Image (cartoon, rainbow, N blue to C red; front, side, top):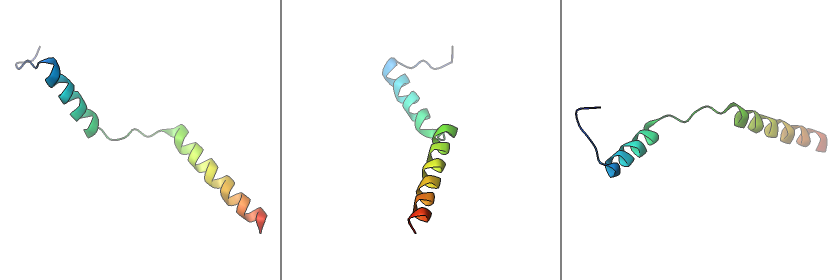
Length: 49
């Protein structure tokens, strides 16, 4: 245990603070979906011309 003890309300506040400070994780699946949707949209534009 650490030197300083926090009550449960303070522990929750600290946890929320650290979650906000963490950088967003890189989600590969979401990135692939985005790239696929963009590709299909561009392909659709080319076939419409």
